[in-house]
Length: 295
Ligand SMILES: Nc1ncnc2c1ncn2[C@@H]1O[C@H](COP(=O)(O)OP(=O)(O)OP(=O)(O)O)[C@@H](O)[C@H]1O
Ligand SMILES: [Mg+2]
Image 1 (cartoon, rainbow, N blue to C red):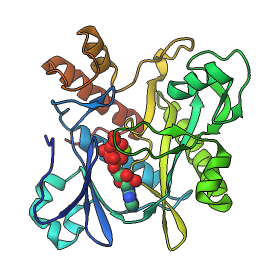
Image 2: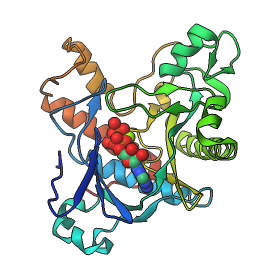
Image 3: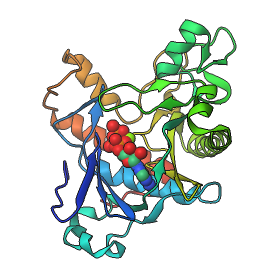
Image 4: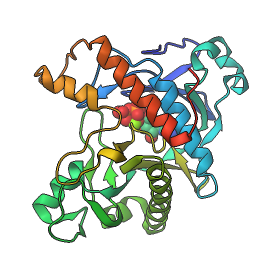
């Protein structure tokens, strides 16, 4: 179980809520820890193996999607990493990837196939999302007539991302790149959601990130994981109410049940909640990949 990494020989670029990123010059080393966040707060208690499960799910998707889009993955076998990583092989095993360092686009590429979260809020107020008009009378969690591209800006740390119109995305990225990431994002979401739905998981929406190397677009970051997407259990899907999260449902229910004010410090989590949550991540991995996770 790993809550935080400390690799003194490597240059730490940043710690996200979940992942620790190291800068190796030409490459980045992305390490998925077992940290979990709920209501935007990182819990004190990690979920054993969560980092491994999510890392390997991203690797699975990068390979599945590789005919559709180029990605940043170089290797996920720590034995092949640059030699300065070798003291840490034990910790890196299964939960890390070596990736090409890119220049990340300043827009997050969100695709929504269902009405949830900030999309649902915006629709209730305006009847549209990011300037895209939608049919009247949709209910919370309804499936949209077709998936929509709803970009957002990357907010500074601690701030919430802001939905923007496609026009705004074009101003930030330039017309050509904006059109291209919209097209690719919709295409890979469609592929992913069909694939997952056949295996009992609804991917309601997701966030992709792209970067540039020598002007070429590359899919970066993590892809189609429960940390970057809303995963819903298909068998419990019922529009007209908030859906159960495939992975964080037990945790959120617990936090609500104890009246935690949804700001730091996080409460201590009971063993049972940790164990049930871990089981959900394993189940998500099992359904998506059709394989048992080796932990
Ligand atoms: N190939 C790459 N080139 C350059 N930057 C990358 C690449 N892959 C990922 N990144 C960047 O790495 C960062 C990952 O940090 P991030 O804050 O998203 O971590 P996280 O643990 O997912 O936290 P959060 O839950 O807050 O999103 C992102 O800013 C992303 O743009
Ligand atoms: Mg992130």
